[in-house]
Length: 328
Image (tube, rainbow, N blue to C red; front, top):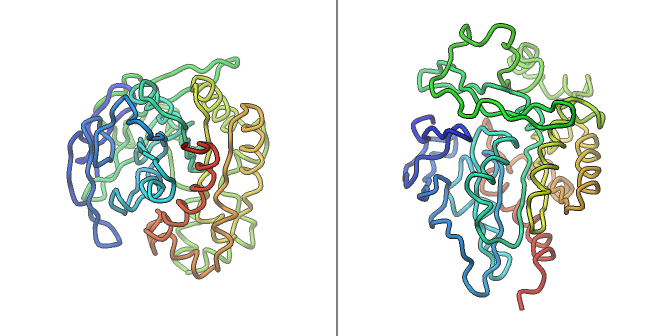
C-alpha cells in the first residue's frame, strides 16, 4: 500500500494526488480515485460552497477513508444520498491516528467553507496517538517502521513532535533505544491472540477473560485518554461551526465480546465538556441480528463491507440532518 501514498512533511503522508488505482482486497479489489489535494474523492475540494449546498467535512482513519470499498460506497458518500442538498468532503487517511487528523484539519481543511465537522474516532485510536512509529508491511511481508507526528501532554500543554517526520523507515532493530514500545501494535496480548486463533477458540477465550481491548478508556485519568481528550479539546475549540464526534466501535464491540461502556462514558463526558454533539452508532448496529452484523465487515479484514457502510450512513443521516437544520 505504501506505493499509493506520498510523503508529507506535517501529517506524515497522504494519498498520491490525482491517483486512480485498483487496490487488491478480500472482496476482489476496489477502485480508488484521489483528488489534487491528496484525499480520496471524485471531485476537487473547493473553498466556496455552491448556493443552497450544505457541506460537511469528515475526518478519520481507514474506516472513514473507505478501505476495501470504492469511493461511492463509503458511508460519507452514501450520506449525500440520504440528506438533501448535502456535500461531504472526506479527509480520511488510512493507518493514522486522531493526532494526525487534527493536523489534516490544520493543513488542508480549516479554510474550506463548511456547516458541520464530523470527527470519526475509531476507538483504537486511543492507542495510536501515543505511538511515535507505525508499522507497514511491504509486498514481501517485511515490516518496517515509519515515524509519525505525535503530541505529548506536558503540564497540560500539547507539544508536537516528529514534524517533519523522517522520510526513511526503520527496521525493528533500528528503533531508538528504549522506544521499542513506542511503535503501534494491533491489539493486546499478541502471542496469546495468535495461539487462541490457531486453536479456533479466540472468541471463547475473550468471553471467559472479559476481554477489554482498550483499557485506556477505563478511567478518565489514564494517560491515553488524557492525551485524546487534550487533542480533541484543542481541535474542537478552533472549529467555528458545529462539531459531531462519532466513535467507531471495534469488531469486539459489534460482536458483543467486549463492553463498550468505558469508551461510551469517556466520549459522553468529553462531548458535555466541549459542548459538541455526539453520536454513537453502536446501538443502531446492535439492533441487527448477530448473523447480519457479521456481514458488516469482511471475513478476515475488519473494515466495513458495503453493508457496513450502509448501516453507518443510515445511523448518521438523521443526526446530521438535524444538526444542519432545514435547508430552506
